[in-house]
Amino acid sequence: MEWQQIEYFQKVAQLQHMTQAAEALSISQPALSRSIARLEEELGISLFERQGRSIILNQYGKVFLKHVNRILKEIDDTKKEIQSLLDPEYGEVSLGFLHTLGVNIIPNILRAFQKEHANTRIKLYQNNNVSLLKQLQSGEIDLCLVHHAFDDPHIQWEKLWDEELFLMLPRTHPLARRESIVLDEIQSEPMIALKEGYELRKIADKLCRKANFTPNITFEGEEVTTLAGLVAAGLGVALLPDQKDIDDSKVAKLHVKWPSCSRQIGLSWYEDRALSPAATHFKRFVFTHYRE
Image (cartoon, rainbow, N blue to C red):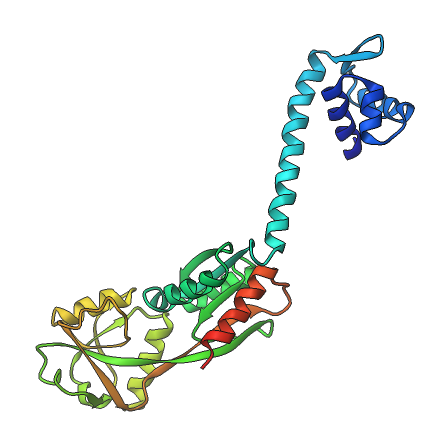
């Protein structure tokens, strides 16, 4: 069964006149008749009842037309959706990002982008560093904001900014009035951290080793705001990025003078996979507006 036969059948069914349908399709009437005859032969049934110059659908033709209309509408909708994806202003971008960027950074980026490109749809995926890069490998997402890329030559990563990590203490802590601190000053303190496997946990462990101590991890969590809440409750201290929803009245945020506490945030994409125009547009926007 050829696609053209289906379109021809729909037009004949709509007009119920072979000559008029041929004119509408810009083909000869004999060519149209042969196409319909081949379709009926392939289906093994007649679809029309001939009444002089007019033809009308029989019971089988009505059933076939119902499905043909549905198929052709699906194809038309698919074409429109693909065209929208090819239009940078009406396309879709799938963006992955670290949990810790969800409160401040991502809303700011999306707000600024959609001021200029209000019709572009953004699908968001929030995950840890390794999971985001796996989603990028599989093609589930177009771009991701991550700490770094792992060892895959096809994944590109370009730095955007450095994000400072603060030592966060309860406001009632004796050191809370300080503006800055050396990290080994808190080596005997109970420490609150993200669970093992999270990039921020790896960075915190590495910084503690650089300061020549092993942290006394008493609580582990999966969200920065949860960890900050545990700090506010007086259960320990933590190395965390600043976020708007951390309660400054309960949590003190100290700069760490040594070692330098920060992490790099950059944008990753899969080099051998073509980005849609919308994703390319978004990528260019991020590099233009958010690269240090």
